Length: 361
Image (cartoon, rainbow, N blue to C red; front, side, top):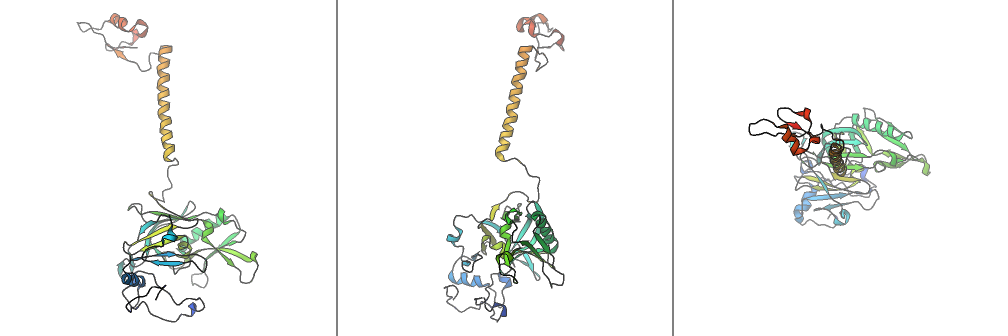
C-alpha cells in the first residue's frame, strides 16, 4: 500500500535494507523514480509497476516545497489543483550512456546554455540530469568557480566562497552574510533542449530562490544565520545535476510515455519556450512594434523629401531635379525646338539641355 493505493498482485519493488542515515527522519525508505535501466532486482521502475497495475498514464509529477508538509508525487499525470492555469513547457529526454548501453537511461536533458545574469557559465552539456535525490544544483568544477566568481563580483561585498579540496575532505560553498540584499544579485537562466529541434525552454530562477538560509551551530540568535548558495561543485565529474534547489522552483512532470520532461514555474521562477540561440548576445534591441515605427518613419521621411523636391522645382525653377526629356520630331525626323517651346512653355525649356534630340525641363 503506497499513499492509499493497493497493488492487487504481489510485486517486488526493491531491495529492503537498513540505512542508519534514515533513522529519525520519519520515513520508511527511499522510492526510486529513475528510469527502468537503473532498477535493481526487477526490470520495472516502481512507478511503472503502479501505472501498469492501475491502467493509468505512465508518468508522474513532482511538487517539492521547503516546509515539512506539502510536497507530493502524483502518479498518472499531474495534480490540476497544483498546476492551476500555469503552462507546461516540455523538453525531450536525451539518450545517455549507462555502462555500455546508450539509450534512455536517466532523466537527462540537453543543456544548451547556463547564464548568471548576462555571463554565460557553460554551454552544450549533453549530460544534464534531473535528480530529486540531490539537494543542490551540481556543476563541474571549472564552470562552478566561474559562477562563484561572477556572483561574488555582483555582490560587491558581504559574500565569499571557498573551493573544496580534490581529496573530498572539504566541499565548495558560496556564503553571504545575513544582511546581504539577495534581490540585487543576478538571476540564473538555464536553457534546456535545442532551438534547432524546437523544444528549447528557458528556465529562470531569481537569486533569492537560489540561496538557503542556514543557522550557525555555535550561535542561536537571528543575526548568526547566513545564506548559502544552493549550488555545489563536483571535483570529478563533467555532468550537471539539477537537484532540489532547481526542482523546488518548478512543478515537474516526468512523462515516460513520450520521453519528455515538463516544467511549470512556481513562485518567482519562470519557464518559457525560446526560439533563438541563448549564446548569441547579438540580438536586436528593437521590439517588433518599434521596428514597424522605424520603417514607417523612414517611409514618411522619403515622402516628405519627395514633396519638398517637387515644391522647390516649381517655386525656384530648379531644372536639375528629376529632369524629364521630351522629344519633338517633325515629318523628316528632325527635332524642332520651336514646337517644343509651344507645347511646354518657353520658361520650362532649357535650351542648353539638348542632348541627342532630347530637351530637359
